[in-house]
Length: 194
Image (cartoon, rainbow, N blue to C red; front, side, top):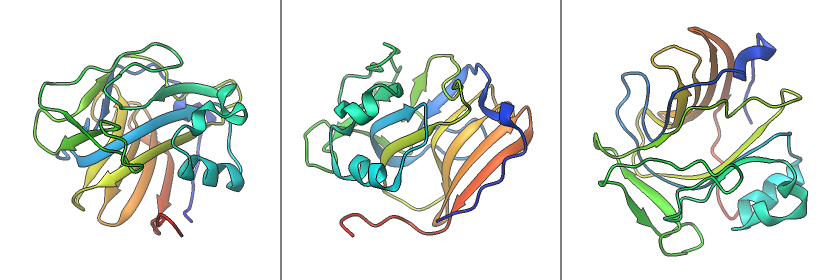
């Protein structure tokens, strides 16, 4: 469902200090989207596990995932990482909406304006012992333009790890300094309930 290119295993080892959900370290506008249940697992997952993650609101509580959780934000008004205790910082403009399971206040809702994003404290969020990780997040794009789900880095073209959309293409990038060391492109969207 995509293509990957990795030039360096050190691509995701950096401590970064400009980390955002819904905002870019580049010149892209802030995002007009909703997020729910963002988790980083310190291993890859199987096709069967992807289905569990997609269809279960509290999949992170499953014994198959709990031992491998590196970070977990539910975006349900509690903005604290349930694994590490890291609290997100959000401007007053950010609101909360129902998630894909119609749970009230179950998703963070960014409206694309300047003050609509969440800041994540400094850290090395994608560094794992075996260089393998999985990111799982529910995203509802309210408009289709160039925007970020997340951008963790040290600024523009500086050790960034990015999940973003450009047109109908979902892109995942890793940068070592200003050089791209990983780029995955998903040309097909996963359609819910199919």
